[in-house]
Amino acid sequence: MALRDFSHDLSALALNTAMLGHNLDGHGQGWSPERVIDACAERGFGGVVFWRREIGDRAIEIGDRVRAAGMDVVGLCRTPYLVGSDAPDTLDEARTSVDMAAALGAKVLTIVSGGTEPGTKGVRESQKLLAERIAQLAEHAAACGVNLALEPLNPMFGGNRSCVFSVRDALEVCDTVGADNVGIAVDVYHVWWDTTLADSLKSAGQGRILGYHLCDWLENTTDMLLDRGMMGDGVADLKAIRSAVEGAGYSGACEVEIFSERNWWQREPGEVLDVIVKRFREDS
Ligand code: ZN
Image (tube, rainbow, N blue to C red; front, side):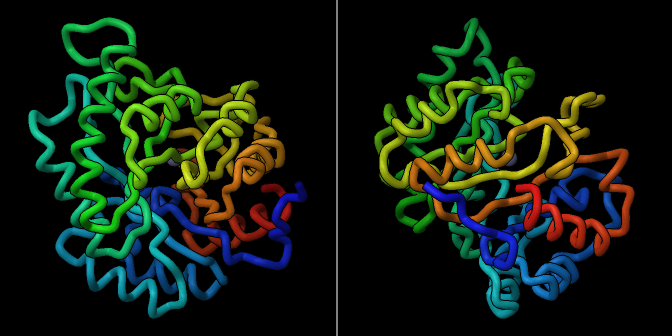
């Protein structure tokens, strides 16, 4: 199957606002959602993905603004952790995040699972509990027209952030949940090392892949959270990964999400967006 050709078509390109440092205090150049929307629209992006902290009580307004600019709200990041010691005691905040996604008109709400549940070891027990909690949340999400995308994280985020590290395990959790509006998000940063990726994705049911996140893995990564690379600057085989994702039936947005404290977050956002467009056309 031929890869989608992005050299003259940016409609699949989406900006995750974390790219501009917007999800962490004291980082980035502080652009408002409106300014980000206009700058993306000007360059022909197809969509934007926001973080909850930027939205506040303005979900409807910001969603409308994106659509008025001719783009989609591709997604919202993210639910609170659902398991692990940092997960809230109830699903209330998770339900509120679903409501925000619905008000924004976001197609997908991302789930980062949270780490190993206190009192357990390894990941299996936590994954079981995670599936139960996602199933509960999925009912509310379905009533709101929101899809939930479980994102497996690179294994180095085990312990406190995630208990799901591979596409294979994420799909297994989805199968346990068994809801039509629950699938996975595939992020280059988290899956680039996985030689079983293409086979795992092939086994995904129709419509299970709900998101594709772009960046690159730098040969010398200096910070596991905040040193992601721009497409083309690293060692991830981006074409092979996208080929596996598209080969499994995904034809949605490619969301550029690069946490980069010392490089991209230091730069002028307009320049960053221009580089994204170029690298998306040529290197993704
Ligand atoms: Zn991601």
